Amino acid sequence: MMSVGQFVVFRLANSRYGIEIRSLVEVVNMVALTPVPTALGGRAPRRAAAGLINVRGVIMAVFDLRSLFELSSISPTNATRILIVKAGERSMGLIVDAVAGVVDPAMGDVNEVESDRGRVPGTSEALTHVYQVPDGLVLIIDVDRLLADVDVNVSDSV
Image (cartoon, rainbow, N blue to C red; front, side, top):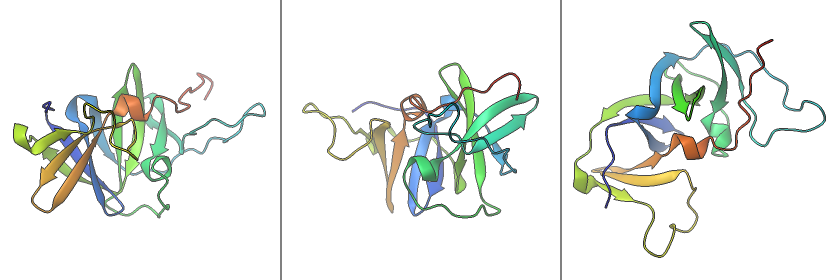
């Protein structure tokens, strides 16, 4: 069993997820996104951005986690938030249904997804830990792994 530090819990559909606090820059209210074409130069990126936002002068790509997790899309609500995260040296946004708060788990409540025999069948490479709470589980995802193959290049001319 490996420990994880504090993490931010958020909701998507009927599930709870978390990302380590060290990956989070800030949480912002949902705003209108500037759409970007999904196919440029005759090729479509594998996992294209939902749009672009300007956060204090920094233009960044925003991804809808519902789309990345292959969940049905919904219209934003008053609870919808954008998590500004750092993946490697890149900053980007992740749209989530709602943010539940920050958790500092007890060591025995967090379990690694990987076992000695390999990964748990059917899980994403981005899923690293599971946090046990009295009414269910919180799936902890690694932002760097999750966003490893997304197209986040934003031209300076945007």
